[in-house]
Amino acid sequence: MDQISLNANGLRFRCRLDGPEGAPWLVFSNSLLTDLSLWDAQVDALSGRFRILRYDQRGHGGTEVPEGPANFDQLASDAEALMAQVGAERATFVGVSMGAATGLLLASRAPDRVAALIASDGQAGTAPGGAEAWQERIDAVAKGGMEAIVEPTLRRWFSPASLDAGNPAIPRVREMISRTPQGGFVACARALQSYDLRAALPQLAQPVLLVAGAMDGAMPQTMRRMAEEIPKARFVEILDAGHLPCIERPEAFNEAVLGFLAERTSG
Image 1 (tube, helix red, strand yellow):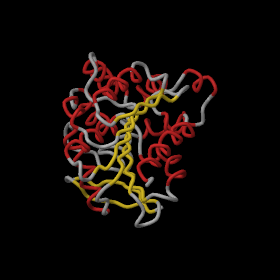
Image 2 (cartoon, one colour; image 1 turned 120 degrees about the vertical axis):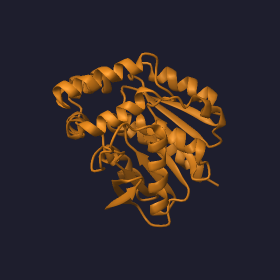
Image 3 (cartoon, helix red, strand yellow; image 1 turned 90 degrees about the horizontal axis):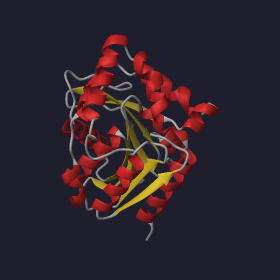
Image 4 (cartoon, helix red, strand yellow; image 1 turned 90 degrees about the vertical axis):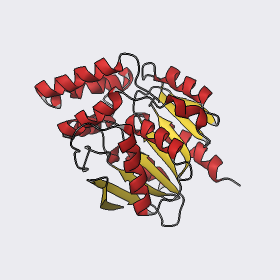
């Protein structure tokens, strides 16, 4: 594993490279309030056969905090610039939540670079009432710091069974949320507060795997509808998982991903 620092769009990004040079590329993009370690279980499962780029989205983890609010044009541009710098000319892009929307936009505007897309627990536009909900969280952080949203976020993100059983992913995600720079959270929350990529869905020509945790509120229904609009899309639901199935139920998530990737590389 090589941790590297790359400059893109005026910011310094923390990135990691895994897997053999010359292997097919995978690119992983994190959600709001997490960092590239969210994908550790996927890298463990896939790095023997794939060259993997992970990076912290702007304002998260070890990546610099931008000045002012972010938008998805910037987030997609960040990903494309980092891919170009490491030589990932064509890759399968894997994103969760904010990272899923990043991948949707990148796949639509750079189809030569994104060979396939795996989008987990993300949607193509701000949900009704979403702008107000994000403003409440931004206001809570302004008053009480990042700790003000840690426990409410964990209760939203994890299934009741995981919360009751003390899933080992919970303390890991708690730390990621707590360590997220306040300015980075606010910048990217602004991007999520008002975006609409829905017009791009019917135009996507790549194979697309849509994944949602069964306990992630309305997300499974939302992603099923997205699958109907994307020409080459399939939807998989991960049982007993919430917003981050990649870390809450990594074995089930990896099974879905491995099946999709096997189809892409067969023949």
